[in-house]
Image (cartoon, rainbow, N blue to C red; front, side):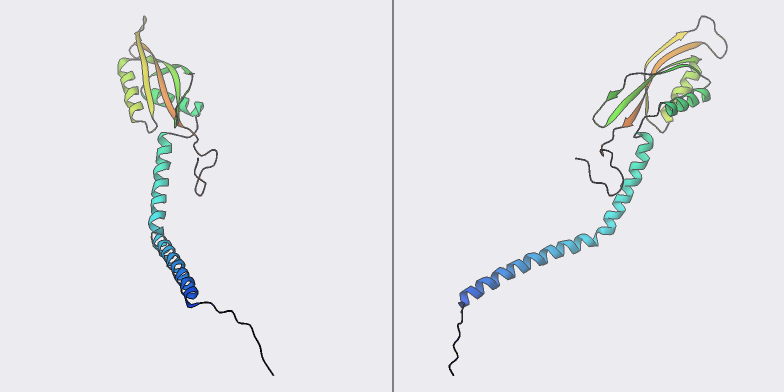
Length: 178
C-alpha cells in the first residue's frame, strides 16, 4: 500500500517572522496590563480625591447655590435686617444677568433705620456664608426722625446662582458635561 499525502511546508523564515510578530504583540499586551495594574493600585487615592472634591463642591454650593429661591433670599435678608434693627420697606427682584458659570440675581432693597444699624447690616451681610454683593447705595436723612429711624437707604443686594453645567445630569457617575 502506498500512502500519499500532501504537506505544506512553511519556511523557517516565515515561522520566525510570525513568532516575532506574536512576541511584539505579547510585549504590547504586557505593557497595557502593567499600566492597568499601576492605575488599579492608585484607585484608593483617586477615590479619596473624588470624595474630597465632592465635599468641597458641597461647601461651595452653600456659597453659590444651584437654583434661585426668591422667598429664601427675602427671608435671609429680612433676618439680617431684623438682627441689625433695620426695617425692610421694599424688596424688589430686578433683571438677572447671566454669566458663563453663574447668574447674578439682584434685588433692590429699601430699608429704614439708623446709620449704626445700616453698618451692622453690612457687617452681617459680609459675614454671611452665601455671597451677597451690596452696591448702588443711596442714603437719605428722614425729615421726621426718631431715635431708631434716622435714614432711609436704597441699595442693590446681588446674590449669585451657579448655572447648571451638567445639562440636568448631576451627581456621582454622571457623564461629564460637554
